[in-house]
Structures are given as structure tokens and as C-alpha cells.
Image (cartoon, rainbow, N blue to C red; front, side, top):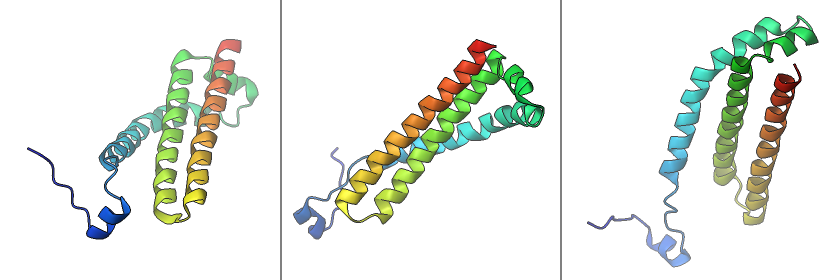
Length: 129
């Protein structure tokens, strides 16, 4: 059975049909949100406990493989969720195609760079302790 796509005549003329990407994007946002709900307490409690106790306490906290792994997973998931959310905002509210393309590229590059920097920092603490 062939799927029907509801495309207006105007969109048919412009070639602006469905991109077939919305459901996957929606699911990625929901999965990352649920993962953040689970990961946040496991990240925040050790972080809050070490916060204010000095540099050595923070290093000791993230010298544990469990805390380092949870911190890395939290940062990866949070920045992935951020990228997905910003992508939706950019696609919905930036109407200039060159500006939208530039902002989407910047969104991906910046969140990817932040992810690598954070994971590298966590790994450096873990392996140097």
C-alpha cells in the first residue's frame, strides 16, 4: 500500500514536499530528554558534593570510573539534546536560506566542539588521577 502525502498545490509547484525527517527528529528529542531525566541525578549529586570542596575533591570525584562515565554520558546527551532543540528553533524561525544554513552549520560545529572538549576534560581528570 502506497503512503499518501498531503502536499498543497503550491508546495508541489515549489518542490517543498515532506522531508520524511520529522518523526525521527521528534523521537531523538524524546529519547535524549528521557536519558537526561535518568542521568541528571547521577551527575548532579557527586558534582554538588564535590562543589566548593576544592580542586582536589573534584579530581577525586571524577577519578572514579562511574562518576567519569556518568559525567561524559550526561554531557554528550545534554549537548545532543541542545543541538536538536536549537535546530528546530533555527528551522522554524530563520527564514533566510543562507542565514539558516549558516546557523545550522554553526549549531552542529559548536555543539560538537563543546562535546569533544568536555569529554576530553573528563577523560583528562580520570586518567591523570
